[in-house]
Length: 267
Image 1: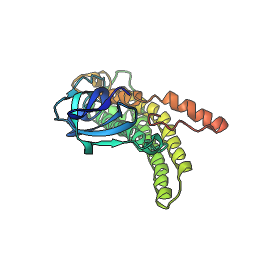
Image 2: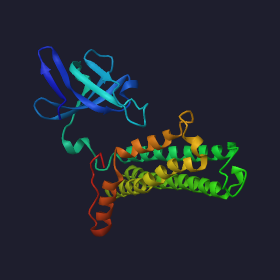
Image 3: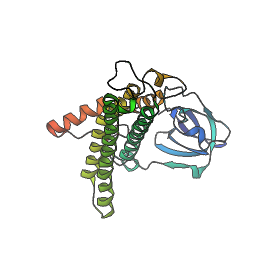
Image 4: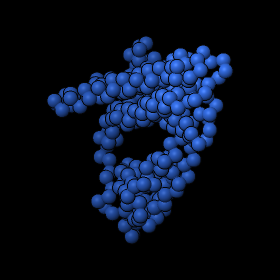
């Protein structure tokens, strides 16, 4: 870990950098993971306006352009004692599978984009005034091919929603068991597994739905003014942060011989 907290004659100071500082550009405070110069790790909460904190708007992804995922630079920033929360032990800081909610939320965003694509696909057909000369009907709203495409897009959106809710139900069970005083380790793994399975399927469903919108809209749907490509770009950017292929690999290993899926926060 390159970001460090040090004790100096002038008090505590923190220096380092981080890319993908999602949301930081809009934040009043930021949470930073760092390490003390002598080894132990810690969490540091800092106001973004403090001297030495530099937030750079350098995220230029094809999608998710408003997430504020720029870089954060800390240059000998003053830190107050009550802004540092040191880890007592690595095991105490992180409970296994404790980031499942975050992964479900990201997949839920892709699901929401798929639903938006379905809504816009219907609106596209409704306002189309002409079709191809070889189309089976004169009116696009009566074209069985376009209606089938719309039905497939809508069905994909429905399926993504059902999968996200199923993963959320699995996570709710973790809270119920924990609230009753149970260990919930089995339930935590099950919830993370459900979230991973949901993502593996939703990624393709959502991407296909966002792409298929151009089948119902025709060439006019590709006009920049329509901005319909944003759905595909946003989904593609979201799901690229945590490729489904790695999740599918570990899901397969679990199904084959019971090997537990990784419990690190990035899986």
